[in-house]
Image 1 (cartoon, one colour):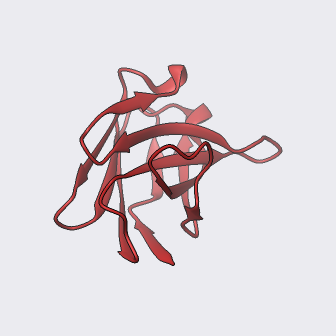
Image 2 (tube, rainbow, N blue to C red):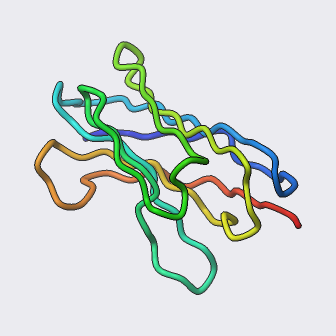
Length: 118
């Protein structure tokens, strides 16, 4: 079992920044992928960004150039720096963890609300 605890959501004006954090604990595999999904009201849950344990990253097209995913392996923590936020970024953001090679996350955090006002 892996537990994921997120923090850092909130309300911000368009153009502002927020940083999300997610700490993982439990039975963590050395080689893994951590990331962030988001779900806006009435929409499906989509991948935002993810990062492997060796630092390889990938992003949704809608956030490229604005969001940066990073991690601290010593702390088993993943971060999502969100800059130039837009109202359409408003969603519940979920931290995820999966073993390397899996198609879908094995574990999900409880979610943190990000609201961007126009």
